[in-house]
Length: 337
Image: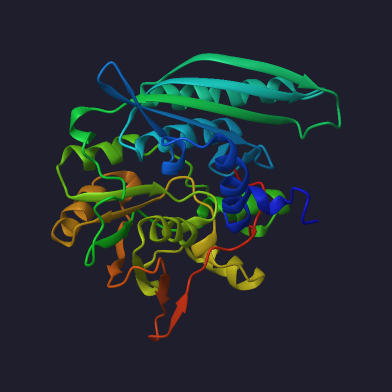
């Protein structure tokens, strides 16, 4: 098994991290790639642009709060937005399985068109391939996006200036997407009450960047969830982070299924949540700005950058105990994006 791809290699956790570093960075290495951002920042004729790509294999294709089409567009828009870019152009590649319903495909395409239009982006190119029945799982989608970085976002540091005392903020409850997909997959009883948080965060993020707050870092909390995201930034920037679990919003249905199945919401995937590291002096202003947006009503300060440069992330429990949050090898729930 050590010489073969496993499901965990696509999890966003340690296996995937090692695959990227030991295989892809080894052979593709360049300064733009090895910055490990959600988008590559490119300079063209004096202007900064962001370029990103992602693939989507979620099962099932339709779930409470979204579908694979909405997910693919929002995921690409968010990868651009957290790097300070305003989305302009999107490409779409479809891999279709023979026998897939044209009616369902049209629903997905309409969903994609709607999300791109809401963000002011155009789907300008694409590709379609069809494989024999049994050689895929109905539909896989690849999207790529290009966005321009406006002047007000040019100096967004993307983690370079993080220092002791900076605070960690998230814009709402964790785990909604992963549990909504699981509920649809397994036909769990609470599926009618819980929806995926799948959404484009472009407007909310750019409202923050326009406001001239001292924002050090933004990343969307997709595969691997909050814990993996914080581990990545802690290790990349050689900082230590501590979060307080009592301040982290988690909906009751998510807590319930996590307790029943032994999941940890800090590692669950989200599709409409971001982590923000900001100077303590601007933290309250950032919270105020976020809460003006419907996608940031539950925003909360959940932690801070501590003294130390060991790349360690810890969580303090309600009763004061502490545990180390390490990057997990695999994934609690495969194929949720």
